[in-house]
Image 1: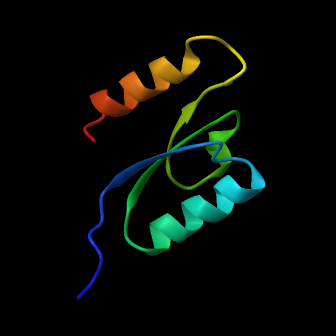
Image 2: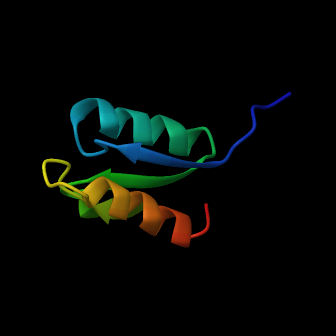
Length: 69
């Protein structure tokens, strides 16, 4: 029996571990929204955020929810 798939929000998606995690999730059949500073280079839906800026994570989560988790 296969594992359930869903829509996953990955913060830090453009770092080394994040890139690997995004790839593994996509390969497993999940729909991924990547959050990071340079998400354009990933082949998934992305939200550009700098987590060093106050309030940007809340905006990212709000945008993710609006896109239909």
